[in-house]
Image (cartoon, rainbow, N blue to C red; front, side):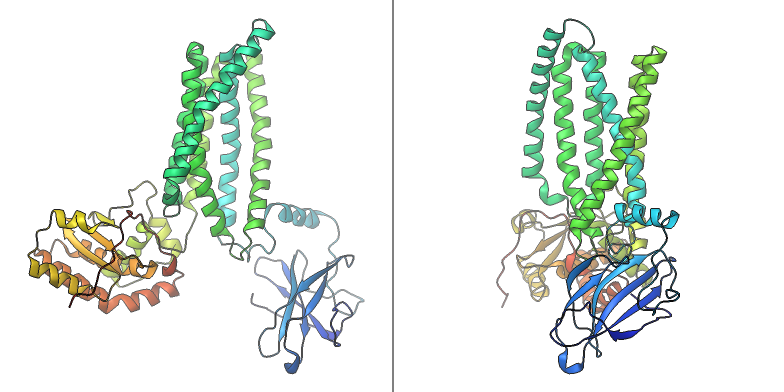
Length: 496
C-alpha cells in the first residue's frame, strides 16, 4: 500500500514482547477512499533483522493480539498489523501522537461495523477490485432466488393437499411423496460430481448460467405440481433432479469465484463474508415471500403464485447474469486467451483483464476463435491420422517443426487441432493459442494449408516473447491458463 503524508512517532514501545529493547512507529496514511490506514511497525537494527513476535493493540487499546512480523526493506520494518479506520489522519489532540483517536460512536461507527460484517478484513486491498460489484449484483439475485424457491415450495405443498383433508392421511401421503422425489434427485448430484467437475475451472461464468438454467427448469416443474397434483412424483422428482444438477454445477463454479476474490490468500474470510451476504439476502427474500403469499391469500387469488413465480425467477436470473458480467479473471481461458491473442495479432496492442472480460461472450461455445474457426485442444494423434491428408514427408516435416514445442498444431478439414504433450503447461497452451489465432486471422488470404501452418508457426516464434511480456504487464498470468481439453496427451520421441 502506498503511504501518503505519512506521520510517525518513533519511541520505545512496551507492546512488543521481544528479547531486546525494540523501537516502534505508527504510520497513519489517508487513502484515496477517505479511510485511514494505521500500521504499527517495529524498527529493528540491521544486525537484528529477523522475524519478531510483535503485539497489536486495537484502536480502543483494550485487546492485545499476538502477531508474527516479517522483516522488510533495508530498514527492516516489520508490520504487526493493519486496521482500516474511518477517521482522518490527524493525531489525537492532547496526546503524544502515538495512536489515532478512537472514532466516536455514530454513523461512522455503524458504517464500519457493517463493513466489518460484509467484507473481508483488509478490504479493498485483500480482495480483487470486482469483489464488491459482484456482491452488489448477487445480493438481489439471492433475494429473488429465495422468493422463487418459497413460491415453488408453496405450490408443491398445495399439490400435496396440505390445508385440506384429514391431517393424518395428508401428512403420510406428503411424507412418502417428498422422500420419493428427493431419492430421484440424488442421481443428479452423482452425475455432476463424477463427470463434469473438471469443466468448471475453465469457464465458471458460462457454467454458472447453465446451472441457473437447470435450477429454473427444476423450479418450473415444481410449480407445475400445483396445476397437475396427480403427477406430483414425476414433476417434483424431475424438478429435484434438475435442481440437483443446477446445484452440483453451481457450487464448484462458486468456489472458483471465491478463490478468485481471495487476493491475500484469505479464502476463509471471503467464504465467511459470502455467507453473511447470502444469509442477509435469504432473510429479505423469505420476508418478501411471506408478504407476497399473504397478499395473494388475502385477495383470494392463490393461483396467481404461478405468474408471480415467473416474474420473480426472471429477476433472479437477470441479476445473476449481471453479477457474473462484472467478474474479471486474470488467467486466460479459451475465450479470454483467444480474445487477447486475436486482438494482439490484428492491432499489435494488448487488452487488459477488464477489457478482455468485457468482450467475453458468456454463452459462446469455448471452441470457436474470434474469426469463426473451430479449434480443439487436446485432440488425439489417432484422431488426426485417421483423416490424415499429408504425405509421410510432410508429416515428418510437421513433427520436426514442433520438436522444441510442447504441442503440435495441425489443420484438418478447416478445423484446428492442438495435440498437447503430457507435460504441456499454461505457457505452452498460450503459444498454441497465439498460433491458432494467427491462422484464424489469415486463413482467407493464404489458401495453401502447409504455407498457412508454417507462416503461423514462424510468426508465433517471433512474437511470443513480446506478447507474453506485454500480457504480463497488463495483468495476465499465463501460468494459470486453462482451456477445455480432451483427455488425450502425447508422449512423442524426438524426430531424427
